[in-house]
View 1 (cartoon, one colour):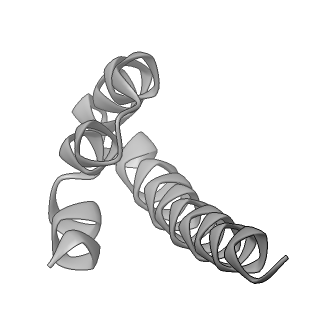
View 2 (cartoon, rainbow, N blue to C red):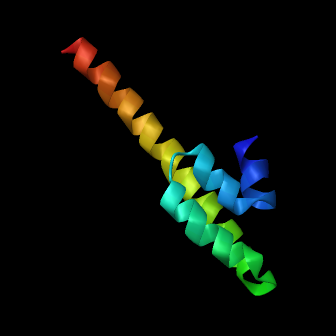
Amino acid sequence: MRLIICILLPWLGFFTIGKPFSAIICFILQITLIGWLPAMVWTVYALNQYKTDKKIANILKNQEGKI
């Protein structure tokens, strides 16, 4: 669901992952027709990084429990 939001409304995608400052910059980019595509790519990349960070944190949390 977040991926669809990131493609259609890139600035809203940043709000869903907790990056309001980036959302404002992304919104300014999205206002222009030329800037919409880079804003979308940036948001999808940020969402991918967010998911990766969550997976790493989860693995580290599980590793602490085993030690």
